[in-house]
Image (tube, helix red, strand yellow):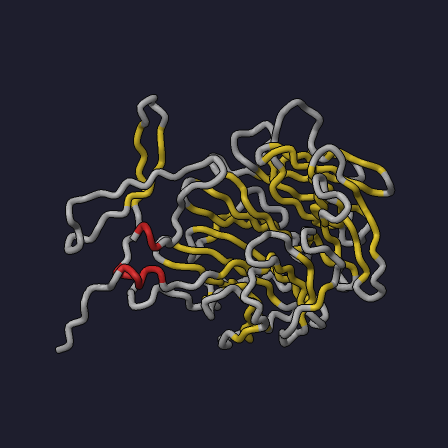
Length: 395
């Protein structure tokens, strides 16, 4: 009988990264930024069950992927060797050489904001002409007409969301990581979405549910972030839903069923909830991942999630509307190791020297591997912290 040696530490580092993804309008193709060939590139898979194939060979990280609603191209952005000076490009459906869609100098930075429902108008933010505070613009991808919508002044500002009828847009003013204000512009009129106060609060995600209603995440006057609603016609703000002791991190709206999907962060893990039409309380949905990095709800009501688990590297899953189960679309795994070889952590809490309770993850070595030593890895917020996601160093 052949006896294999114990897995070498090098094996724990042989996993692939999936940074972000997009799905075609007909949900027959999945696009993702990954280092499957050892370098960051954009890859595609035919659904269901297709094998990944490359669309780029630049070996450069992309900032986002947006599929044209009619399948004519992909929109994306690349920087150069990590300089974070992203420029906007279009790719043919089958990939190839990226084509610039916005003129930019080497040191300019461009950020994607929104694409119109017909795929013709691209909304974006650029540092060109306003490197400190940024400008928000709209370009017609057919005619090339480029229009200034908002010029930042005194504070860094960016285009956050655009209404379906393209008559309203929201500008986010970013004073710091923990203080932002959101401003709605319609018919040359400005409206403040949050009630006026002296409080410093955050607005971390915002979407138009329709042309008259905004849904967004804020922690205004609260220890934890929640979902709020703002109606343009009445200028009314109200709290839509909150989960006690959990921070809402992502929201998505399914127009046809009038259903709100949202994901919270509680301690070292994410949770998923659904608030249906006329429902009094949100319903929790089990997930195959512990931490979530990107979510997408399609017009058909199908839910896609990208994230990691405590014993699982980056993977993408899909939940078909009406189904209670998740389907794995990718099969990223730790080379040469079975999930049973890995340790799922315990969540523990202990008091610091001043009585402050601190939460931590405890990875207990399997008895046959234990050597009597404990590695202590301090790393925490408020801007980032350890969570239940696979990392080779904790193994």
